[in-house]
Image 1 (cartoon, rainbow, N blue to C red):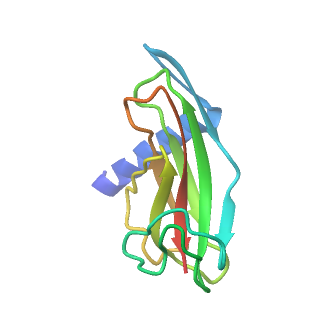
Image 2 (image 1 turned 120 degrees about the horizontal axis):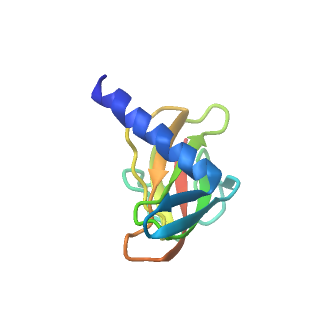
Image 3 (image 1 turned 180 degrees about the vertical axis):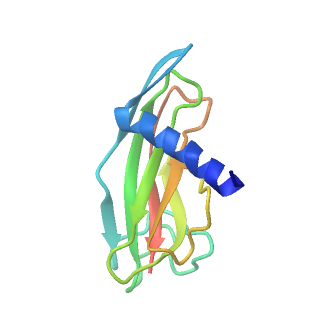
Length: 141
């Protein structure tokens, strides 16, 4: 089994746990809520500086041609390693350029996503927080 296949298998396992909304561990249950995707479009205010995309800057209007697809993740942690698997799809004709976050939503991309239409990532809040909420955004152009 290749390294990529093992990573994909691990991501699927995380997705199964996240899909039920709870992960069981010795420390107790974690409640994970993933909200429906939202979109920020051209003219709306960008909530972060997009790494590698100079056109997207916090507090500035999103330029024409860009769409930010966001998914909010709320975690009430019991298990130390609980997180969520998220799938992002850019709107028709657009491709992924980078990701950005607001709040306490960290993320890990297990594969190269740049210039793909769809990808999956894992979101884990900081380990020191019992409660965390944040939004992961895919920058699409």
